[in-house]
Amino acid sequence: MASEPSAPRRGLHICMVSDFFYPAMGGVESHLFNNSQCLMQRGHKVVIVTHSNGRRQGVRYMAGGLKVYYIPAVIVYSNASLPTFFCTFPVFRQIFIREQIDIVHGHQAFSTFCHEAILHARSMGLKTVFTDHSLLGFADTAGILLNKLLKFTLSDVQHAICVSHTSKENTVLRAALDPQLVSVVPNAIIADQFRPDPGARDPRWITVVVLSRLVYRKGIDLLVVAVPRVCQLFPRVRFVIGGDGPKRIDLEQMRERYMLQDRVELLGSVRAADVPRVLVRGDIFLNTSLTEAFCIAIVEAASCGLLVVSTRVGGIPEVLPRHMITFAAPEEDAVVAALEEAIERVGDRHNHPELSPQRFHSQVKNMYSWHNVAERTERVYRKIIDLEEPPLIERFRRYYGCGLVAGKLFCLVAAVDYLFGIILAWLWPAAGIETARQFSHETYCALAARPRKPESAPPP
Image (cartoon, rainbow, N blue to C red; front, side, top):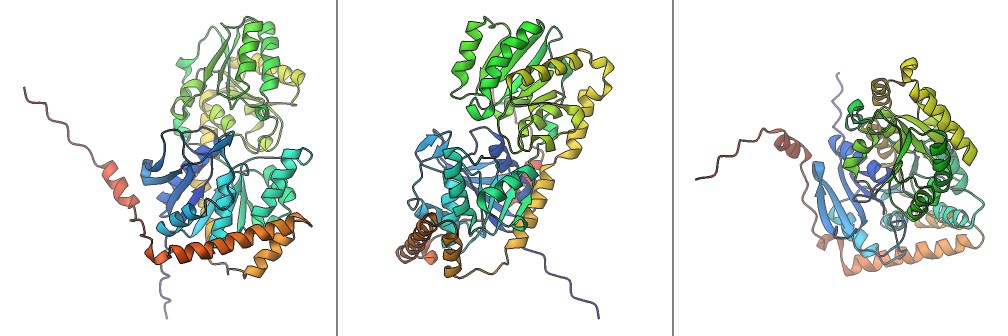
């Protein structure tokens, strides 16, 4: 007797939450947008919740019908919002119910919205996933405090995702997690948007490109001391530096002190659409990060045909093949020496066929794909969606194990949040909250692919 065909699995309703999203720029922002687009193409519903950014407030629709909630919030540092603990619960609850969310997926340990959304989602009995995009130490005060917060959040999530194996080891140690509850899903790029353009380079110069947030963690202090030394050693080398942040003033002062205005170009903040146009101007891409879980910028640079010079930190050694990248210790002399080696290789490119920009592009295109990232992320969702919900006492037991003092505090926070959820359910019952209309991704794609009729000429 033939078995009956299995019913198709329904698409999941997923809410991505992070303080870091467009119009701000960075690897987390790119990951959220591109992964969400591919998940929607796989038949899932995805909405993103982030804080407002200037005039970007309320509900917006982006490419592919991606729905984004920009919630008003006070920004305190590095685009992260002010912690409010329970004040965001009414807003998050309304969104989760309106959008009929199954899984809440928080991104980035530095994001206040991420931690609060996961806490509120667990109080509502929703499944949760956390993706860690950064590495943190264990010795400094900020790292210790954030590690304790991360342990609180990850004590009650169904699964965690890291962007590299080094990041996984770091997260497992910081949050005392079972390694089986952590998966590795790397970042990716849309390689067709990062194509080499030999005509964009100035043949009179060897151009070193830097695209980064200008903050201490990105090693801008190393950049400040390395640039004048390299310019002195190589008269034909210039630097193009894009990005903004508190360390920009140090770069401006360095340029003035050594009179390098004609050899160091500071672009300021660079829009996402302009990143490929900046990269193709260069021969070498320089990354001086002091800590990095993955570094998507070096993948974009390699796809554009640039030879990469990077500090050997975090998960960076896992990202690119050895012939595409030159490593340096996070020290001034080591960075200068690595740049010297890269400049000599680029200057003698005709004797190094492995440095072909087109070859770099085709190799990167075969290595990284957002569709592969979305498929692996979906496997995590399918793995946890049918897990049995633990009793409330089990949640408290997990929080209590976070430390002698912190465990009791975490239990108190979870209990207050749970009681607050009961009060909200009494004041605004779920049955009285209007559900959002479902956006048809298939219809959107069909209409977008339909050829447009030529516009008629205006009457005389």
